[in-house]
Length: 95
Image 1 (cartoon, one colour):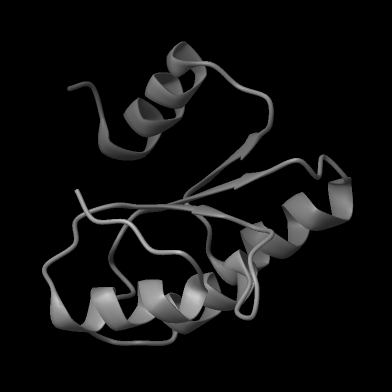
Image 2 (image 1 turned 180 degrees about the vertical axis):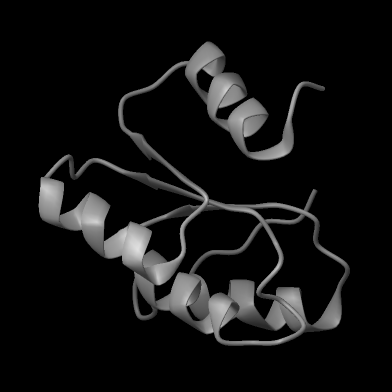
């Protein structure tokens, strides 16, 4: 498992390591999670990676923005382990 402090650091990790799955918070600085998602989906080598967005924002327009950017699934905080597992299963299949 790898972790990054912000989207820019995450993008660097993604480009230099083999990453199978991304869970990202929307609210990061200086590169936000939605900006990271757009970078990932725009990169031929990364666009296949499943991506779950985590956020405290439950506004419909945010969900739509994430869907339009290519998010695999979306989780609104607060959430528990069972919710995370269910979202991951919906993206990856049962594990």
